[in-house]
Amino acid sequence: MSKVEERSTAQPEIDQTRKRIIIIILSAIFMSLLSVSIINVALPSIQSSLNASFADLQWILAGYTLSFGVFLVGAGRAGDLFGRGALFIFGAFLFTISSIASGLATDPAFLNAARIVQGIGSGLLTPQGVGMIQQYFHGKERGWAFGLFGT
Image (tube, rainbow, N blue to C red; front, side, top):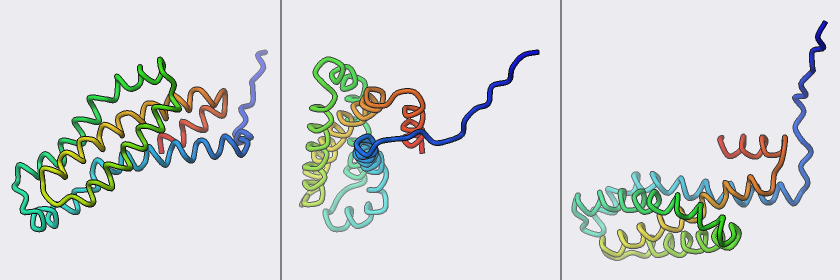
C-alpha cells in the first residue's frame, strides 16, 4: 500500500517585515498597471480642456503602453545586474514625478511626454517587484506572495 500525503491548506506564517514588503511591491505594481487604462475615463475632458486632437489622445494612451513594454525586459536584466531595490525606487520615483507632471499638463505634447516617462518608470519598477518577490519569499511564502500578485 502506498501512503497518501495530506496537503496542508494553512496559510504560511509571514512575519511583519515580509508583509510590509509585499504591500509596498504590490501597491506600486497595482498603480503602474492601473495607469495603463485609468486615463480612458478622462479622455473627453482632456480633449476639451487641452484642445487635443484624436492623434494626441491616441498617443496619450499608446505612449505609456509602448514605453512600458520597451523597458520591461531590459529593466528586468538591469535589476539582476545593478540591484533590484535601487531600480525599484528609481522607477517608483520616476513614475510618481511623471504622474504629477501629467496632472499639471497644460498642452497635449507635455501630457504625452509625461505619460511616456511614466511608462518608463512603470517599466522599471514592475520587473523589480517580481524579482524582489522571488528574492525575499521562499517555499509556501513565495506561492502566497505570487498568489497575491496574480490577484
